[in-house]
Length: 468
Ligand SMILES: Cc1cc2nc3c(=O)[nH]c(=O)nc-3n(C[C@H](O)[C@H](O)[C@H](O)COP(=O)(O)OP(=O)(O)OC[C@H]3O[C@@H](n4cnc5c(N)ncnc54)[C@H](O)[C@@H]3O)c2cc1C
Image (cartoon, rainbow, N blue to C red; front, side, top):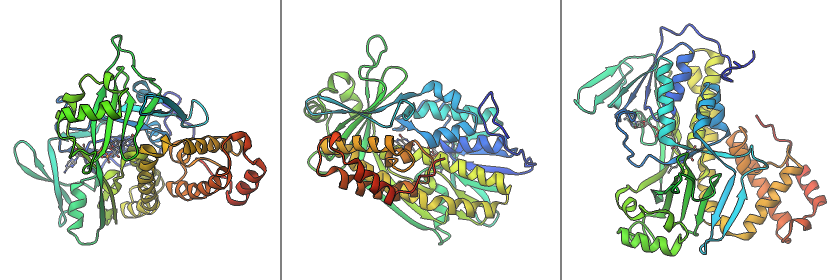
């Protein structure tokens, strides 16, 4: 079967599903995307979201940051027929632009060419576009309804209206928790006593700040790059917005000598920025005000299992596997959950117990792996990108990939530009790190690379990668 030429969307079997209602908890990024695809397949979909409708009340509440969308997320959006529309509100970022203490700039490309980019998008704009598309597909979104758990005897999901306090129990065939890292549904599943659960809070927080647009609405820094001010134990990053501004995030320890605890006034923050991120300060006229008024966010890795209760309840996205944001994969991974879920649905039909079981079997190990990769990447971003030896190895990686595109694909590329399972990216990444160390440790110039040795190591240790 061929794709729809107008939307690029894959065809799917429209099932006789009108009699089945699916309840989704949470209209963040994943709920509406999954809702769209389920409605396209003929299900009646209702989403319950605890916040008010952000299209009517723009509440930033620390969630106005930009996100990097890459191949896995793009694939899911394309499958839902939404990527063409989204691609109008993104800015491609071709690499990292590192800012040294003295303001020197070093550019490190992410991939081999201009198609291997990550795409900056405003979380709020993406969320609004997804909700609009869901409603256009017939999905009903109920706002101001907080999930307070399940009625496990009837299988109904329980909600409390945030304004009136009225409680209701909503019946449906299945309930899917897309209610994020602090999932209420997951909390209620824990009470059943079968859920294994771990939560690791990072001892770093983050704060959103902004780089202003130039007087003519132009970007004041290179717009097709993700900017990083790596400073060892902390960092500032900036992602471009289509209005000429940059959304910045300061990642800093909660406690310690240079931390949110010690930078407890906007004057101290300004002094710190002037010393540590000097070239950014003139671009941030609202720095002091934003530093004081914006909340300090926290970051968490959540691992749990099982993600399901019989064929009735399933967790998906951050509710099942929240990760720290340093590989730019949380949403991409959650969107890939949707891809896998829908492939299984198209294969099995709404045989929910089998579907939920196979979904978890396909995803659990992979989501554990991206959680580990994301933690690893934090050290790379805040510290190693400032190290010339590290940048040299990155150059060698790209050269090896150019010569052996089937066998040597850098870990970053496997995660970001391919759809190979995250577990494969993790395990091949370890082998490649070892090979790189062997090839690079005694040389300082790419011209001195021993290609004969590279050829034999790569053919010995790396089979051709099956990319999707
Ligand atoms: C600083 C930062 C930067 C990030 N950058 C990236 C990036 O560049 N790329 C990337 O792929 N990912 C990134 N992420 C991760 C990404 O934001 C998440 O993985 C993604 O939002 C998960 O989507 P979700 O739908 O599962 O959860 P969410 O988007 O968090 O949505 C959950 C929804 O459920 C609602 N809800 C919560 N509790 C209830 C309840 N009891 N009842 C009803 N509704 C409820 C919430 O209000 C929310 O609307 C970043 C995260 C952070 C913190």
